[in-house]
Length: 114
Image (cartoon, rainbow, N blue to C red; front, side, top):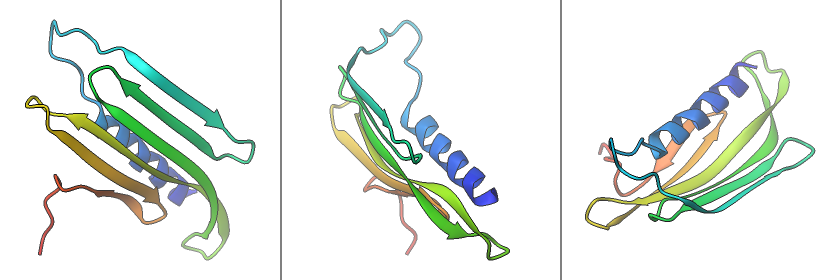
């Protein structure tokens, strides 16, 4: 159960980092496309795009892993990406996985220690 909670927290962190509130008085961008498909076994596919160029896509897949007591349990492995334009119009992209190993983002914008 702890692994499942960790994956959920990591996925929520990704959502929080990917979306920031608009500046005071700024118009809220309209959603131009949105999709959410829940699968009976627990997986899902989710995506949206806004008129100002923000895009996000994500899918979740149920996977069986062993917990710290070596007992099998089901978790949802999340894979996704988001992109957004900065104030200069440059597009920034982040790909991520959230699984039993935690939240793992990849982007040219994320510094990497050598």
